[in-house]
Image (cartoon, rainbow, N blue to C red; front, side, top):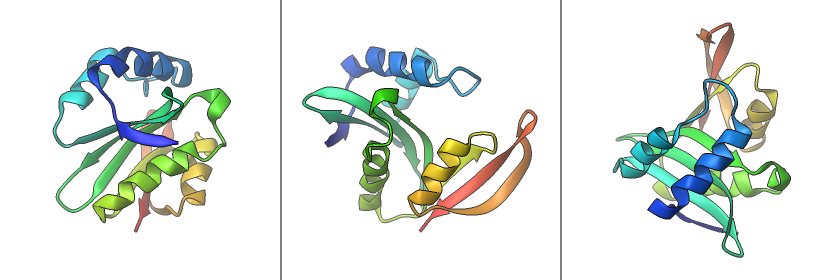
Length: 138
């Protein structure tokens, strides 16, 4: 597994992966992905194996912490530690990492817990009818 910054040519494929994984208002359009790519504070990386993109991560490096916004792994490659590898990539910044997950998304919530995140707050009705769970990894 190799984790490197995405390049402009990756946006189309990442947009396709995004469309396969996210079907609600959490879906990022190609324009939003390009905006992330062009933002100097955005950590936008891909996870590859044999030059095949298996997944990606979007996070923002702020002054005193990192906001982990999204991890997407192609379904057939999920549960193979690629998402964990992407989180480990953020350790090099030596900053606390925050993530937020829809309380309805048990798979993502459990993934974060298995990777050392702790629930620190609940945002009531943050996602329309669902709560947002704020997590932190030290």
